[in-house]
Image 1 (cartoon, rainbow, N blue to C red):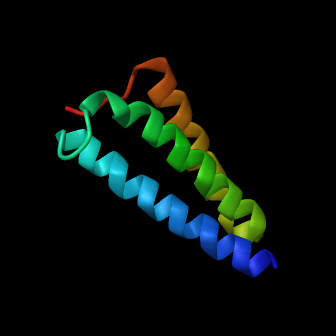
Image 2: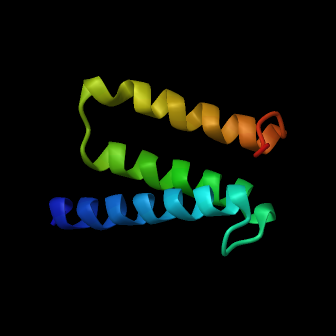
Length: 79
């Protein structure tokens, strides 16, 4: 069951990443959607890391946290 849920969450994470990339360039999606899509991607990625827990994945938690902080603070935005 965890594997099935994990694979579904990984697919959602991938789809959100692609949508965020498209929003960055304003292709198919408005550029204003970039921030919320990045936060959603980080949350989905964190859920994936929790489902497939390994100490080697700790850096992933830090990366996701940094993404959310930078997007929410307005420090990081598409050029």
